[in-house]
Image (cartoon, rainbow, N blue to C red; front, side, top):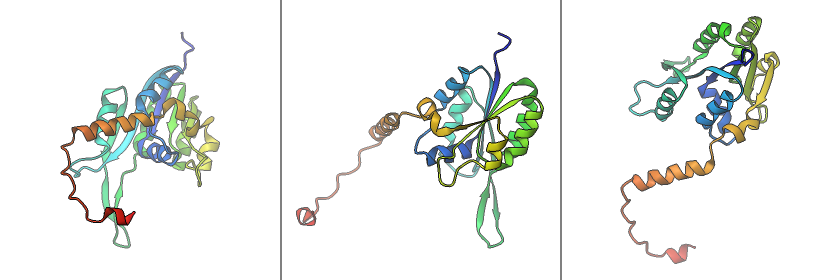
Length: 204
């Protein structure tokens, strides 16, 4: 049993979301966890995302809560608002430092790091983790135009896995989304019936 590979997942939440969206599917995080639990001893699955604090309701909040209760170590921080040189309001929510610090700390306790991100800024982190004897797989995609993964990160990784090849293993069943929407619609109060229109036949 001693030779079972110790694995840790590092998920750049915003980056993975954008990559999956560009490929036209939703991630099923329960299936994702199960997929990697089957590949070795999963030590930790980190999920990183920035949150807009003053929003009354954030669409990502239900996902964060679910992940928190279902085997993920969720790392969040509030986004920062700033005004750029042209006077435009921008929101900044970069989690690179948090991910890098955790990866360096975990490197001594794992054999295999799986990074879900295409961000080229992580190239030097991957190199540093490899120097500690850890194998690094990077998951992103080259099937989009332009590719979602930076070339330098792809070259540095021990293994590059295109997210499109994992759709069947970690993708959410499209029917499930339709089912959830239907349940949501059923719970909503019925809309008042529209007033009858005058000349519908003529418009066809």
